[in-house]
Image (cartoon, rainbow, N blue to C red; front, side, top):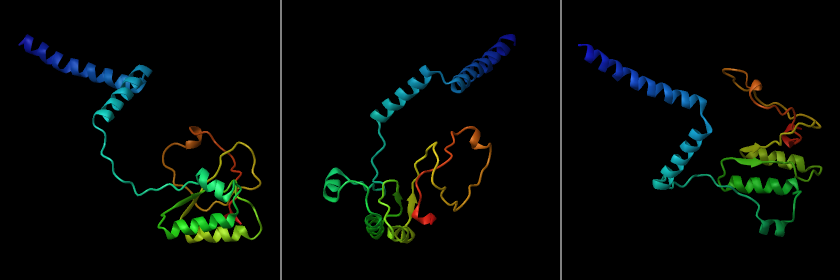
Length: 167
């Protein structure tokens, strides 16, 4: 009887210690374990990679040949508006537009804003610690659950990129 209680104690104690050690290593995450985990993952990916699946995402970028033909930045906003219209006509679901280097000419803001309104454009901002001429208009808010992220994420007080949609 005493031997079976001892066996039962080992049967519970040993797995509990292994589980506890594993949890402790997961929480502490020493560099050796992280490196080992990354190497094992890389080996698994090389041994049995995920099959290729065509993604419906396409990236359109201006290459050196296009820049040689069209010229370097800044690009007139009317030309960017034409590009956005062509991408929308080709079936683009969303377009990312960073307007930091666009030539700022009168009347071109309205043309670019109209192109933005006709398509799904995600406007980008460059984060900086400096000050901007004006802050962009706040178009919506965020739903927040849990702790306040401002305590954990570095803040960028301003964005120097004005949007023609903010006018």
